[in-house]
Length: 156
Image (cartoon, rainbow, N blue to C red; front, side, top):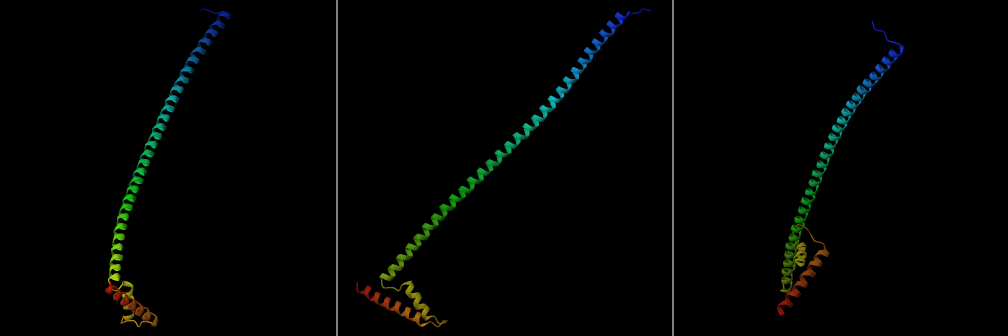
C-alpha cells in the first residue's frame, strides 16, 4: 500500500479542505442567489398586487368624482329649470294682478262699487252674524263714499 508522508498528507488535507470550502461557498452562494431570486419575485408580486389595488382605487375615485359631478350638474340643471319655471309663474301672477287692479280701477272710476266697499257692506248685512256698531258705521261710510263717487263719475 502506498503511504503518504506527513507533508503529503497535510497537502492532501489542505487541498481537500480548500476544495471543500470552494464547493461549500459555491453551494452557499447558489442558495443565497436562489433565496434572493425568490425574495425578489415575492416582492415584485407584492408590489404588482399593491400597484393593481392602487390603480383600482384611483379608478373607483375617478368614477365617484364623475358621479358627483354628474349629480351636481343634474341638480344645477333642475335648479335652473325650477328658477325659470318660477320666473314664468311670477310673470303670469303679476299679469293677473295687474289685470285685477285695472279692473278694480275701472269699476271705481266708472262709478262701480270697489271690492273693499262691497266687503264692508256684505259684512254689515250678513244674516248669520249681528254686526257691531263700528262695522255698521264703516259700511255706511263706504256706501256713502261710493254713492258720492258714482254721482261724480256720472257728471264727468
